[in-house]
Length: 496
Image (cartoon, rainbow, N blue to C red; front, side, top):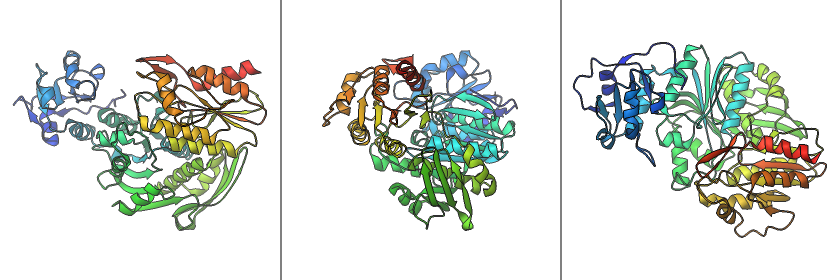
């Protein structure tokens, strides 16, 4: 975990009062905290260790390890407190909320000292934040980025473990960015992070909403619960301004109900604050004309493909202008924008067909990316897709149907089966689908990719979907090296 060099020592008694916790010790005034950690292996001497209840384990099980590493106190719930001895324990009825508030307070609310942008939605978060980070950087604004693929602090890149970090890590990273004189923080905000209160204590200048479609229903009880989680971000507690895509029905609902001032986006609706006057696409990208606040006109070329990517670009441009970047500069920057790793990422080895990798792992994302593939070819769309194990089972048949309808040749395969049997996942994927040759079910993902490539003819498009930027495949608790981009490249080399 990255931490600021600058000392942020604060008294345990003050933190206890801020979060409204009870304590097992009366002598808190003499204890100075030098940091906060939510993973025992990240604890440094002088830290407060936060022990949260989880699905499989309670963080209190790791308290002794944290204390051996130098933790001087523990924040937990009543159940966790029973397991901890040797240091003062702060007991909260909602330790997740307390962790967020404590972390933001400890680092003196670093996100308020940056122009912080949070983007949420089922699809597009990574691309919007990456595009916005690229615009900010090209415009001379040193910026931080936190998301699914990576965390960036200026030129430094750190691989991400989750889309939105735990609260102590999030606030520490923000403090590091402030310390290194970043002007902006651009980050993805997941529904898990909102629900689990990882962003409690955070504040954004702008929050963006891309879209909402079925995903994560293993975590949320239904789509209404999923939407309600996203909507929590669009309040004055968390933000000052909302930028919302009206082309999505949930976006229209959100724009109507949020208490925040709203800037609207639409690819087609010219009454939206930001919209396209024209899009002229070809095989290398598109020429676009974007209309915005006060009649602003931004014209230029983009290498991005697909309607959903034009939505992502529109949001990035709108937020960039709202942040004060000159539209003339943005027009010059447009042709340089590349999008995010593993999002319609091309693998080019001189072959006579297109080969792309994308992270699409929801029914709507699969539908959209296959539509984009069809736009860039007169040949066949050959697509490879699997569904992850130990995740939302209700979307598997929907993803299978999206592949069946959107691809000329559909190859059903494994994703990250995790603890499930890949064969059983595939049965659910192809439910009610007649898989007729040359479409096929192939359990081994590498072989599935190889089969797709071998079927490709000049002018076709091979799409490998689901894992995107990931560099491993999780099977029975073990992560094996596996990168769709590398496997695709190997298959192309062997075909040549």
